[in-house]
Image (tube, rainbow, N blue to C red; front, side, top):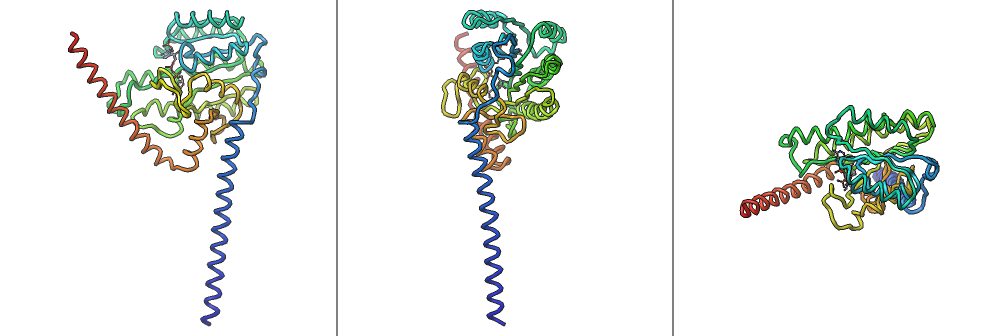
Length: 335
Ligand SMILES: NC(=O)c1ccc[n+]([C@@H]2O[C@H](COP(=O)([O-])OP(=O)(O)OC[C@H]3O[C@@H](n4cnc5c(N)ncnc54)[C@H](OP(=O)(O)O)[C@@H]3O)[C@@H](O)[C@H]2O)c1
């Protein structure tokens, strides 16, 4: 009896070990496959060619927030691909200078429209709509974005900043897209790129409205992408970690934080390729960002990353407040 019991206990232990082994091997294989696919996507798989959206055939690209940072780089690289450009941002002089430079360098046509998205002015959208109706839009880059000045607890944030973020990052994107989609649908061709952020992938405390607004863009891109796929329109949410720019306040590039030029090149080379993103209609095309996204999604829990983000933003806030204090004191001394 004793021997029989020991044999059956051994069998149960063996069966349990085999089961755990199989589950573990399956889990490891799934993770290894997703890592391998991410690397393959980022380094090897080609994206949809921009010629599908009319590059070099008289098509136009509409770029919001086109006068600086990532948007300016989209303008340069799409001009190089021979798209005509409609450039939109606040500062007419910057738009004019960029338009002239790109016309001369690439022999393209340009139009500019200066508007402040924070105003949510219906006449701006109506004017822009009239311009858009005179051109064939192949590409829309919903790039314009604004952020909290410094990381700030939600209840201490000004109503003005909260309203501006919603108006620019969400309403602006929705309204411009509505102006462009009908003609893309009619031609059964078009590309809509929505500039997202890792802060939309995992919440960033102290940048709560910006973070939630970017999550909105991610979800909206999935819904819109599904709706428009049958109409020949590609919608892609670009899941972006830090890039050197005025908004990020980062001046020096690293492996993880590229300059706008290589970043935008990676986006345009990988249209329709997921890269490091596991979210439908979303792409994380830049190697450093894709590796980080993979780690966040596969090796960490959301709760852990939110905690890390909270600690990081708290520290940034502390340093930003100290800087403000120093500047205020220097200002007093020079008075
Ligand atoms: N840089 C990053 O690390 C990072 C990371 C994740 C996501 N993103 C996203 O990428 C996009 C571009 O960011 P960026 O870093 O390139 O920003 P940026 O360098 O600050 O450039 C912002 C552009 O938008 C225009 N703009 C700003 N506010 C505007 C307004 N109220 N109305 C009209 N135009 C306005 C600016 O031109 P004017 O001043 O002339 O208007 C400028 O052309 C944003 O959607 C941002 O959320 C950036």
